[in-house]
Length: 564
Image 1 (tube, rainbow, N blue to C red):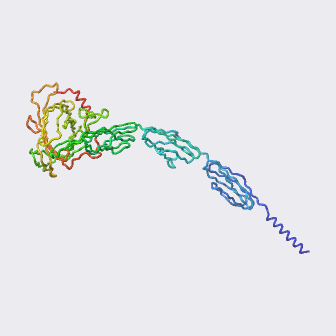
Image 2: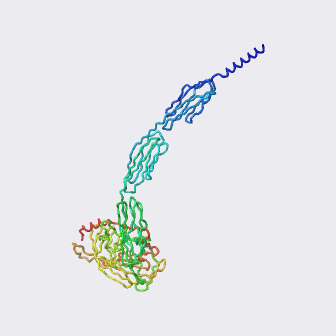
Image 3: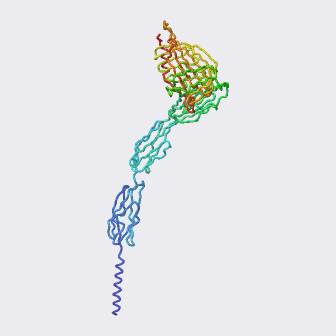
């Protein structure tokens, strides 16, 4: 009996302990949900429990200062700023023993703002750079920009500025583009308008003259845009069919084997503008095999040519006759860089006329290569080749403008040993822009010798010498009174040596004499070493060289009342 009582007592104690172990776990929170604005923020709640607990399922945009503990605790939840334009939600899972509860977290969407300072920008055809201000609380982008617009959103320090570089518009038509500026779900449109190009087009010279066989020649095309080149004949070959802005256009021609000249045009277009370059090519010239001659094919002056000679002390021109050997091996140089240049006369595209001194020549009726300006010692000499004669029209420099009328015959094609001529001429002009001057006289030519020349650099064979003698005598101007004194007379003599294979004289000896006083005014000589003859090279620009305002002098000459 006693044992039964003891067993009952023990069983009661065990049952009492089991009831203690099955005590209920409590777990609650002070709030059921945490609300946040889009900005970064902190919220707190309290966990109340009689057991140990943990917090799980924490989103990456939230941080908690405590994630596990026991009993009652105060928890702070920090939410990062919401970068999205939609609400975001999550639930924290809080577990204590076998008991689990949830706490909702809700963060409102970001409110993106976007504004731009300009909605339209206008640009000239030349292109430019402009900026606008972009006002937003979000990262932004620019889309829909064509290749002629280069946007630059800047760096972090100036990200509120949109810089736009607009490239040059090389078309006549205006162009337009609409850029889209985006920040989040917001967008604004910026219209870009650019004017069309107002084309300009100019050429350095309107005519290119070629001999039957010639080197390429060039002009300069000046434009602010794109241009095209179209030749009208297959024998005329420009080096390019198109270009942009300022460039050189070199033109080549096939050899003309015909005994007739030929002409064509090159059309240059830029937008609606058109320029014509007239191409004139001379006929094929037949030359005899006589080694001692001065002929048009080999000796005609060519524009673009340049000679660099050496002025030397006067030497005796030597004997005339056949098979002469002139010894000029001992020369004393006084000027080592004496230059002679040959160029085209001015050409007016509006009238299609050349201007040679005071004379105008219609393009259509002017033979190719017939008009040339020679420039030396700051003086321009005008020549016109016509009917196998080289006609001197006059010369001009800062002090004197002079015109021959009738023209002075300066040479003939062809000229052989023994040929000669003598022609009268007259001239009038201005000295110092106001004092009238007039002369008359004759020009006499004689091919008086041939043979060989010995220079410091060696011997040159097949040389013909031509002597030019010009008588210059004062003449009376209209309205002036004849002077009782005899007119001043002077004689100007030039000897020129031409060698086979060289276009220009390789040696010159000249002398000016006062016949009234029988004394020498001046005498000199020029040596043009054959090895330094520089003729027209590929790409040389065919442009006139002007040293005077020709139109102004013509006006003054026409209005001037000459003084005796």
